[in-house]
Each structure stands twice: as C-alpha cells, then as structure tokens.
Length: 569
Image (cartoon, rainbow, N blue to C red):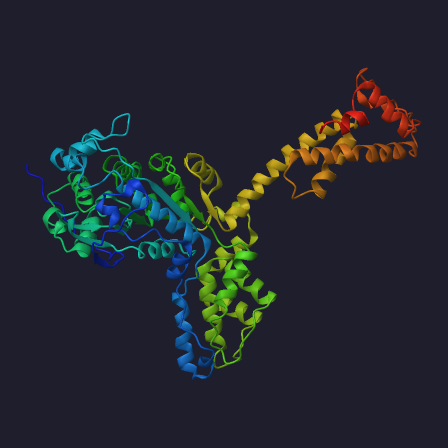
C-alpha cells in the first residue's frame, strides 16, 4: 500500500533575519591560507574592535531641547529606548568568534578545489552515511575545518541581539560572476539564522531551512522538495546538506535551541547529531543559542563537534553590580525626556539594579516605565517611583526577580530559563573542549566557589609550612589565617610562605606568654631537633645576635662577608 504524502504545512514559516546582498568584490588577503578562495576573498575585511563597537551600538537620537516638547511627543520619544543597544564586552567577543568561524570554515571549501566538486558527484546522502575516516576526511577527500560554539544564558540579556548585530556586519548574500578570469556564477549564502521549531523537531527545522533559503536567494527549494509531502526527513537531510554546500553557506545559526527539550527521548539527540554531521562531514559551521535550559542538551553529542578550535563557548548571565553595571546604567541614563533632569546617584543606581537584578531587558523597560509615569506628573525619577512602577507594571517577573535577589541556588533551580542547574552547568563545562567565556553574575558565582577551594588548599599549605618551621599546630593555623587575611590579593605562594615564617617568632612568644599566664602553668618543652637543624642555633633565648651570626657562619648556613662580596667578582 502506497504511503500517503505527509502534510508539512502545519509548520508556519517564521521569517528569518534578513541581511544585505552585494556583488562580489575580491580583496587581497594578509593570511596565506585565505588566498585564492573566492568565498573568503569576497568577505569584508577583518574588523577591529573599535569598528565593531560603533556598528553594534544603537542609540536614540537625543537632544536636551526635547524636554521642552509637549507631553505626548515626549511619551513617544521614550519609546525610542526600546531599540537601545549598548556595546558590551561580550558583543565584541561574539563578533570575533563569528569572524574566525566564517573564515576558518571556508578554508576546506574552496569551490575550485577538486575535492569540493567531487562531493556533488558522490552525493550528499552517501557522504553523510559514510561520515569521515580516522583523519577526519570524508569520501570526497575533504577534511572539514568547520567549528561550532554555543551561546547560552539568561533570557533578556541580549544573546540574540549580540549574534544578530554581528551577522548584520556581513552581507548575507554575495553574488559572484567570475573569479580570477574564470566564470563563477553563484549566490554565496554567507549566513543563515533560524529559530529552532517550537516542537524541536528535525522535520520542522528542514522545512524552516528550505523556506528561509528561498526567501533570501529567491530559489524554489521548498516547492520542489517539501510542499508535495513525499520526501521524508531522511531524504530532506542530505538535500539540506547539498544546498548548504552548493551556496557556500558560511554559518548556520540556530536560536531558541532550548526548544529541543520538548522532544521525546532521542529526538533532541537526533537533531544535534545532524548538526555534528554538518560540521564534521560537510564543513558547515554551526552556532547554537539558547537559555540555560539548553545546557543539558548541548552537553551531549554536539559537544563533540565543538572540538579544539580556540573559539570557546559563551555563557551570558545578568550584569554584576559594580563596574559593568555602572557603565551600562550611566550610558542608559543619558536618554531622559522628563521636563526636569534627574541626575543619576548611587541610590537610583542601586534601586535600578535591585529591581532588574542586572537583566538588561528588564532594566531598559523599567527605565521607560518610570519616565512614562513621571511625564505629565512629577517630571522627575525617584527611587520610590521606580519601586512603584516595578510593583504595578512588572508583576509577571516579580516572583522570579525575588528569587534572584535571594540568590539561593535551590530556589533558582526552579527557574531554569534564568539560572542553570549546577550539576548540568558543571557537565557542560567539563564536556566543552575549549575555554568557556563566562559573562555576568554567573562568572562571580563560579569564581567565588573556585576561590573557596583554592583558599582552603592554600591555607593547608601554609599551616604545613608553619609546622615544619617549629610552630605548634594551633599556632600554625592561627598564623596561616592571619597571613591569608592580610595578603588576600597576593597569589604568590612563595611570598605567603615567607610571610608565615616571618610571623612564627612573634606568635610563638605571644602563645608562650598566654600559656604562662594561664591557671594551669606548664613549662615549655623545646622540640627535639636534629643536629643539623638551624633552629637549634636560636633555641636558647639568652643567646646574643652576634653569637647567632657566628654559629650560623660556623655551620656553613650563611656566607661570610668575604664570600658575599666576592660573588660578583
């Protein structure tokens, strides 16, 4: 009995991010491995940080004179803050990773190389089926240089904004006609950003892919391969890979990857396995973006694809109250349309943090709400006004913010979109083969826990040093604690050990005095020392400094004046 065609039209197409289209203009490359590859030579030059910072930032047009405008006009002007983007360090790091990912991924995909062309003769179904050999080479002889990285973090902190701003610095489509005198007619798809389907299915992703490609480069792949419903997912997957190779797809970005968590057992792993095949066999780089809920998913097979590349994953949490929060809020505070200008002070800065908990999206919305409330009334922003609008107009997020303010892990585990489960987080870090870039509050939490462990190890080391130099155990513990407290910033263990040794005499004396004044007076018993132990020189308190020097000189523990000053000759 013939199988009935599947109806795929249940998946509504979500318009993907659209970028610019340009005619190919090839530029000379500084890096030798980039030369002679039209996919790389047609890209814009490698951007410096200053350029990226200026391009990513989005500021409202603002003039102080606008404060004198009518109430309704000013209410509309406040809405301009909704599009505000302040360039933060993680924006720059995301663009740098994207730049390296694109260029390095294209290195093994030169459209003029015999191996690249051979793939189309072999067929992508066979390429995917066979995978790669022990050297990472596919059936056509292509050894993928593609990489991947994941970007996960709290909702509302600008993950999507960061990647979209970076993508839009590059043309989405480059139209080639000839290269180095040879005909080369091709529409190069530099990047494609898709949202993970609401049901997390591979079928939904296939459909989104064909629709997105058609909408960007004007093809009819969806109509040809999908709309009739005759092709199964197993058939569509190699067709996707072929289209990605044919159009030189530079990077595939999948947002809302946490939607995979809705899949039944094995479904999420199937999609991530496909991403791994795209990267390792076909050579298409992949970026996965999601909330903390995605961490467990990304700790599976996809972590194997994020192999030793130097890219590293990015974990973004809320801003830390301190320097980075001050920078952000001071920049935001410039856009104020109340009739009376309210200067930003410490109480206002602190209130904004407590009411938003360092989440950028909530902070921006709170600032807008406060201005809307003030315009036509007090025309000023105050701490009490901020608290009032937060309580009245942001009721849905109040329970979550309250949990975050308490900063208790047990409670925050209930909100996995805002905070990671720590066992899952540790698994993610362990499986990630590259440096993981931590941003915001979570960085402070991790460093704090690491510091506790490091301080304990350091403490035990210093206690041991004090005991070895003759201090009783209780005194040694006291000395170690004091040295760590006095030199908290100092990381050099040799320096700290020297401080411990220097502190032993005074602590030993004070300890002895304390014991002699106690009710149960006990005579201090000197430790039994080896004949060559230098502590034996000073065990007698009656000894004079000159005699100490002479004894140490006699034993050969120190240099004579003649030997000391003769070292340089």
